[in-house]
Length: 461
Ligand code: UDP
Ligand code: UDP
Image 1 (cartoon, rainbow, N blue to C red):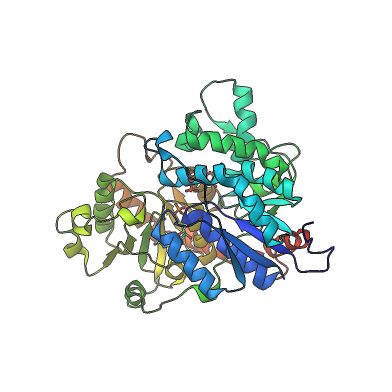
Image 2 (image 1 turned 30 degrees about the vertical axis):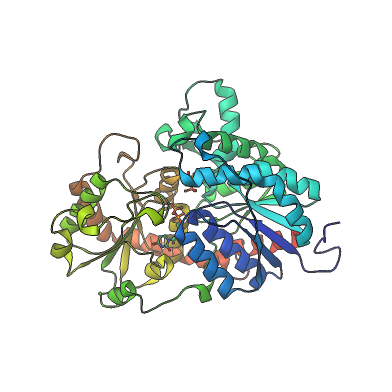
C-alpha cells in the first residue's frame, strides 16, 4: 500500500520525476525545495546519470548539497539505440530513452514509499500508467507557459479535426489563436519524434491527478482561467498556477563571480543582459549580427554566448565567433562570456535594465520576478508562444516578423540596435515590467494565489 500522507498521519512524500535539460530541471528543483521547506512534504528527486549537459550535473550537485532534505533516487536507464533517430536533438533523445525506461520506475517507487508523484510533460503518457499500477496519484509539473499547456492539451483535438491537413493557426477554445508561425517547428511534421511524444502526452493529460504550471495569474490571465474552467479540453484535471517558482536562496552564490563584479561597477539601469538559455546554439551569422547590433546600440551589455547545443562540445573561441576586433572595440562597455552565469542574480542586479532573451519559459518567469523588461528574440520550440505571452502581458516587446530557426534570413544588426535603443528608452515598458514583478511577489507570498495553489496541491499529496 502506498503511504498516503493524510490517511496514515505521516508527512506526504512526493517523488518528482523530471526529464532532461535545464529548462525542466531548474523548476523541478525549485518545486522540490518549496514543497519540503514551505509545505511540510518529504521530497525525492529522480535523477538520471550521466546528464546530457554539464550544466545539469552541476545544478543537481549544488541542489543536493544545499538541500540534504531532498532525497535522491538514481534511475538507471535501459540501453537505448539512438541510431534509430539520426541527427535528433540530444535532449529529445534523452526524453525518448527515459520514456522507454519508464516501466523500470515501478520498483524504485515501491521502495521509496511515495504518496504521490509529479512528473514532467515529456514523460506524462508513460509515467501515468506506472503510477496507476502503484496506486499513486500522478501529477504533472508543466515547466512551460500556461499558453503552451493549452496548446499541448488542445493539439490532439486539433489534429483529429484536421484529418491529416497541415498545421495552420490553432485557435484554442477560451484562450486565443496561436498563429501558424508560432507553432513549434517540429509540430509541423507529424512524424517528428517530438510531435509523437507531444501528441501522446497531450492526449494523456486528462488522466493526470492534477497539473501544476509555473506561471501566475497576472502574467497569463486568459490561459490560466480557461484551463481552470475546463474550457480548453473536456475532462481536464485541476490546474494549479504555482509560479513563479523561485530559486532557493542558499543555492544562489558567488558575489565574487567576475560578471557580478563587473555589474557592480556599472551605473543603475544601464546594462542590457543578453542570453539565449542553455538549450540551443545561435547560428554564427546571427551571432555576428547581434554583436554588431549591440555595439551600434551604444549601450553597456553583458552577453552570455552559446555556440553549441550541448555545453560539453563548446570549444570555439569568442573572438572567432563574434568577428574580428569586436571584443577589443567593446571592452569598455561590454562583457561577453561563454561561462554559466547565475541568471537570477544577474536579473536582480540594479544595473540591469533590459533582457534580450530567447524567451525560454524559465527566463521569462525570472524576468517577471525581477521586473526586468524583455526584448524577445525567440529561436525555437515554444519560444514564440512565450514571446506572445511576454508582449500580451506588457513584460516586453517582440517583433513577430523577425525570423527564427528554420526560416530564411537573419535579424539584422540595424534592427537589433534600433529595438534595443527604443526598449531601453521606454519608460512605460519599464513601469509595466516592474508592476508585473510586484504581482509576481504578491502571488508567491503567503495568501497569494500561487502560494495558495501550492498549499492545496501539497494537501492532495
Ligand atoms: N512539451 C510538451 N509536450 C511534450 C514535450 C514538451 O508540451 O511532450 C513542451 C515543453 O514543456 C516545452 C515545449 O513543449 O515547453 C517545447 O519544447 P522544446 O522543444 O522547446 O524543449 P525544451 O526547451 O523545453 O526542452
Ligand atoms: N541559466 C542560467 N545561466 C546561464 C544560462 C541559463 O542560470 O548561463 C538558467 C536560466 O536562469 C533558466 C534556465 O537556465 O533558469 C534556462 O531555462 P529556460 O527555460 O530559460 O531556457 P532553455 O535553456 O530551456 O532554453
